[in-house]
Length: 253
Length: 317
Image (cartoon, rainbow over all chains, first blue to last red; front, side, top):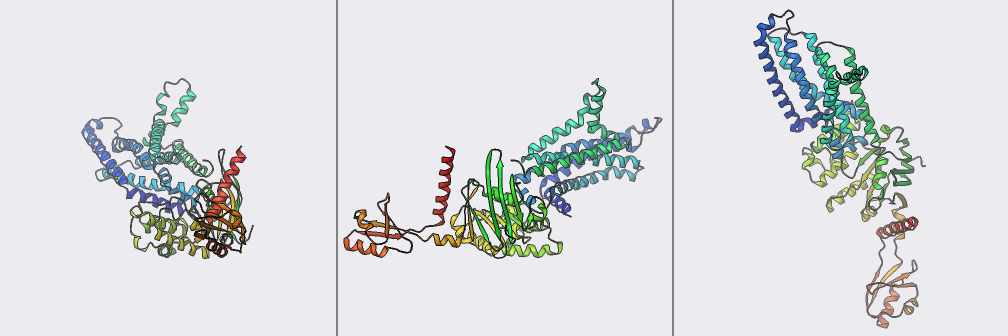
């Protein structure tokens, strides 16, 4: 109940500012452009594709690359959305309102996280209308499509959890945003050198930490619990860290 | 500890690293009482208030709110408190109605009672006319009222107000003070300020805090008795020798002031003013001023806080 109230409040803050609308419009525009390019490419190359033994379907040729691009764009968008969650409240001294109310730190963090997730869900569902429109003309591999969708949702939830945590660390939204960008990019490319590392254990660890690897596996339609657990662990760790951080606000100074 | 006390603070201390912000503070607040916290800037008033409202954890000490331990059951205890910090915690992009509705939800007022709670609170704080306006566009005085509205919307047993009249015009200050008095009838109110007359006008009890310690605590009623003066200011164009003045019945001490006036000390309840005037006329001293010294809380405040500082300096040496 309280979580819902806080989530609603968060959503409202987003929508009373032009930021949410701008982000939604720009993202939709860019992805629509990519989608059209992908559809065009598919149609042009269709005769050659037909000659292959294992004919790649629409899902593989259009939807998977489209959601790959979406993941990239969300990496740039989510830090902008999460940066102000706690830091701005600190700055405006409105955090006191939440801390003096009969509400636990856990409720505050989960509420704020849910608010952001609701917004990102709305964005994702708007974006998903484009690939779904292909249903009018042909068939989709529904299983593969769902796997991609779940991968994307887990990915943006992880982005948000990390962004939320960095927002609890500072009272300057820009610092939180830059920190989130840095951390996300690093996690995305962390396995870049893993092939050249001789030590097998070290390279295994690096590639396990890489978000891209887990996302790619799911996006290819390989629904492995290792990848799902990775994301769920990631989200939980950063949510718990955020709660702890908010709690220690009262202790230290 | 008293069973009926709304707030009970025992041996409260708070350190910021090596700095001691609050040291061994003890006090109680009972229902129907307005308690004024008075102190110079940086004395620890706000820190104490933040601790009572659960925004800051104490380094040492116990706080009970309506008998509930604040540290063990923060949610239950916080439900009994309404708090207005120094900077009102407002969401500037919301209208007054939306903001108060959110505060009501936050304080777990049941959905069917929210509308009534919001309407009543707006009425109490004089916000009926601005319900639809954005908080950002309101004047400082109205924003302060929204802050107070936020603190009382859930009818808490204890209202904690940190410098509630800062930045308001005189008329608004009067309104806020009467609102505080009204709140103090049925609840406990803790109020911090450095405006001395405000304490005399609105509070039942005053506590002076200096360098993190409670150095004075008394009822305003007692103070008013103490404030009955035992001094007179006497202005004479041709002052006589001190012996002549001391010879007048009731005069215990004569003190020369820098501006040429004399300060006459006398015993309590034995005012020699009329005898002084008679003498001045008959002896031709050229009397131009004879006023009783009006002792205010300010004197007590300055006496206590400055003597504290001297103690500190001596202690440091």
